[in-house]
Image (cartoon, rainbow, N blue to C red):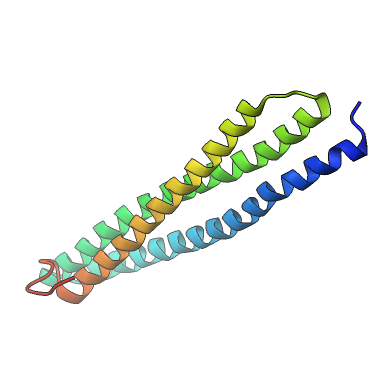
Amino acid sequence: MTTIGELIPVLQTAIGPVILISGVGLLLLSMTNRLSRVIDRARNLLALSEATGGPQRQKILAQIDILWSQARLIRWSILFAAVSLLCAALLIIVLFITALFGIEDAWLLTLIFIVCMASLIASLIIFITDINRSLAAFKVELYGYEGEKGHKS
């Protein structure tokens, strides 16, 4: 049986993943807020497109296409952030189980941690890609459906 004195180092080790959960949780909140804004903006533009015709309608539809692409990116970003959170929680559980039962399996802990970090990295890369898409949508709004028209990025 494991004593309290033996569990204290495990508790100290578990602090890192707990802090990670808190930080990624805030990032996830930010991503879900961003997704809500993209969806709201797309709905507003869709309503506007129904009342508009001609080139202005094409400009609005181009923005809606970009927003659809953004929403899909944000969804993937949220998915990878959630996987990262799940792995961090699983890491804490596995830390305690290995300590309680005296299992010396560093490979499992290492694998869970690597998946956690890889998911977080994927989430952040996709989120950065989404930010770039929002600039593309803004560019369409500024310069029209045709794009640059002589303007540099």
